[in-house]
Image 1: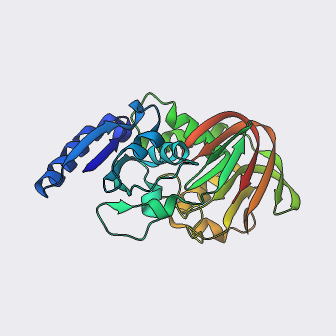
Image 2: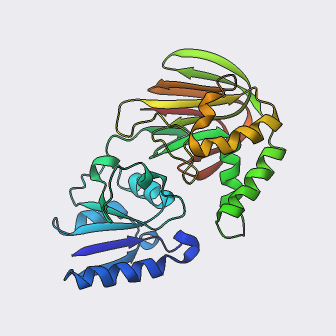
Length: 278
């Protein structure tokens, strides 16, 4: 049997059509199906463990759905095969997996994930996490009454870059501490992609034992406007005067003001520090 867990909020609430199409396709292949909203399951881990070992669990949703999944099953012995079908608005996780399959088995990709601790709460992340203006953009998008779209993202990004004030930050990477001035944002990347296809960390390799820490600092606001579009192509790394990239396994950040944090695109308010552990 194929157990389909979908996020009804994915694709601006239009994921039901994708569910229906998948059910028709699977049934045409002679497979029995069952559909459940992942948001209505009290314990995703217990639910998955309760299905038969030979059943396939298929997740329909974007990066937020997958972030919810990996943190829900953390610490549980999950042996059932878990697959993903693209159905969200971001899907940076799927972009980073070298597979052309329609359904991608992800069990191996959700093991040994890095952790972020913020405001006393530890959670896993799939793609990346960070403090600063990029997290503020996520906050504006997530709290917007408009539907998620490229136009809405650009509008909120423009608002964030016009109003956000950078701050100094003390950063410790693998035991080496340095203070950076006028920091716009600090990221820990576990994958090339974040922000809906932006190549924040073009040299990252999912599954290796290192993270890439990206620090954007001392760049004038108008120059940041020029640099930001280059992130889609991973060319921001050329601007070494303002873009610092360091590989490592641990990072502690003390930001000079209360700001926002994002983890796999999900925003957290009232943040001033974070701890990253690979």
